[in-house]
Image (cartoon, rainbow, N blue to C red):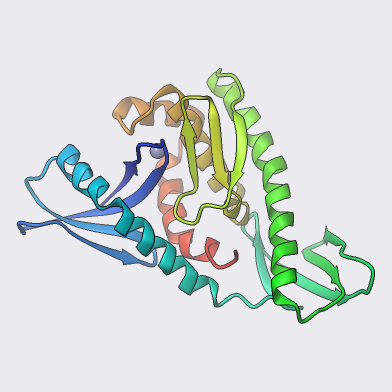
Length: 237
Ligand SMILES: [Zn+2]
């Protein structure tokens, strides 16, 4: 079983696991980790990816549906657990008639709202906070790693993507999902390094991984860790 990335025409990627089987047709299923493809042993990578691209609407719809099911489990109320940079933090919700403040202090994300039962309002507030923090946090990492790779710092956009962590394009723009802010710092560094390396190599060739390795030597372990983390990082949102 091997991990691959399907490159879409818009430059974004969908990670998938490939399992080669003694069979004649291609089968796909969506697991908690994402897309799993069963393919005949003799198929070439480019043939396979062409077939996957022809079924991209189905794949994306299924991935989204799976995320929606997972997300229902998050309960937006006082005392709930959240993840920040790999640590579990507490959500504190306090009733306040005139304030809608949000602040993070010593492992607690404190939210003040007129209605403490208003889960939608709490969720919106917390997600806005994550997106704002993500922009600052990822921006700093991109700057450092771009300097290490000796490329100009690309423009960073924060995405809300559920099915991919990052993407980049030829306009020197990188998109990272704010959901990554829940992951440990080395995982965020890995995804950042991966996208930066695509600015030099727009594929997943050996050359590409050599570039990744230059700025993030332990990329193999990080890639594995990210896969097993994926389910956790989808819970909120
Ligand atoms: Zn990639």
